[in-house]
Amino acid sequence: MSLPSPDTSWTPARWRGRPAAQQPDWPDPAALEAALDELRRQPPLVFAGEARDLTEVLGEVAEGRGFVLHAGDCAESFEAFSADAIRDKLKVILQMAIALTYGSGVPTVKLGRIAGQFAKPRSSPSEVRDGVELPSFRGDMVNDLAFEADARVPDPGRLLRAYHQSASTLNLLRAFTKGGFADLSRVHQWNQQFVATSREGRRYELLAAEIDRALRFMAACGIDLEAELQLRQVDFYTSHEALVLGYEEALTRCDSLTGDWYDCSAHLLWIGDRTRQLDGAHVDFLAGVENPVGVKLGPSTTPDDAVALCEALNPRRRPGRLMLVSRMGADRIEEHLPPLLDAVAATGHPVVWACDPMHGNTFAHSSGYKTRHFDDVMREIRSFFGLCGSAGVWPGGVHVELTGEDVTECLGGSEAVNDDELEKRYETMCDPRLNARQSLDLAFQVAELLRH
Image 1 (tube, rainbow, N blue to C red):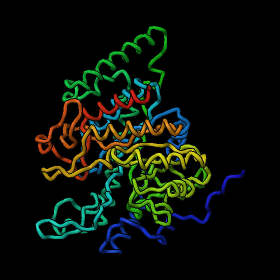
Image 2 (cartoon, helix red, strand yellow):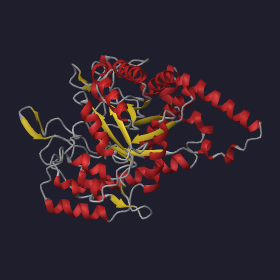
Image 3 (spheres, rainbow, N blue to C red):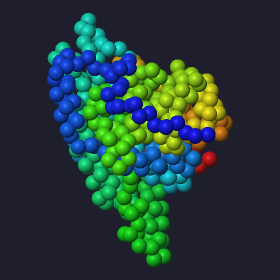
Image 4 (cartoon, helix red, strand yellow):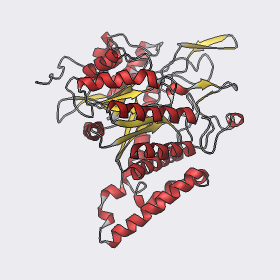
């Protein structure tokens, strides 16, 4: 059977003729257009060839020969931007990847929620505090977190600031991952001081010592470790939710080698559970770019929805093109995920199935803070692995919100954050994140699930 041909009628602006959910209410159309024109003149943040490389490695994951660690901030911040914060986040992701790869024997694809994750969907367009109603905070790309009337007005100048901070972040990430920081000989240096004294940190140090011994053995056998690039650097890819479509359109470029369109704001873009409408602008936009794409599937997703999204976003059935991310919640995944796994498997679509165990497990604490419990996160991941196994589907990845900082935003973990500690270092702009100890604990447990 011949595969469908690419849609030659697609253009980066075609989404404007579709219903577009979760878009900011920009007050000054002329200022918005000026900002978008400036973005169109800027260099791409990533390159088409890099996105093709990611599609290729995700194709291996779809075939059961890899695992995706998709991790990073719930929302990046203009104010908290620093080289130290980027480095510490990368350290945690590298540690987790080492634990996953060494513990399971499966290659780990490192995909960051970084260098573009500045916009957030909201359940309501406004919020009320003490009788005062203001527009909701939609991420630093759109408006400011401060609960003040002027701060909550969408400002197109923030689109440009998000672009420039993303460029700076990518420059640093490339320097770290290709310039020696990610060399396996430095594996001990990724363990931060406040993690090293924990149970997870001590377990990581034992693993790092085993890697040291393996490297010494390889060198003794005459292998030139300096010549082995796989030991000295890593491939690290970026992603964000493609929410503000004007920004994404402005950074979409036609590849000079293939003539295909690529959204050059990130290697992978995803559609959220709130914006996955089949006739909506977000699905139409990402259907036209050649990047690998993801879709979040919540409890309201039907089997017909899942299959239709596969057909819309990957009609040519290219391995590595599409990632479906379950975000059901620990109490609902056993009911809602199996019909989706079965329906998609029956079509033969080569998707990467991943689990977001964070967003379905958020609750309001008695202190007033939003939080998640580590036990619920792991319960959903264990259910995901079990259900994939029952359906004969490869569990292809996890999608987690984390930070390299010593925060107290999620409860639980082996060295538990208790209820009375939640307020000590609650620093997130939006959703609660796992700290470095909890993240490493998660990686070791997922490695065991993969191994068995």
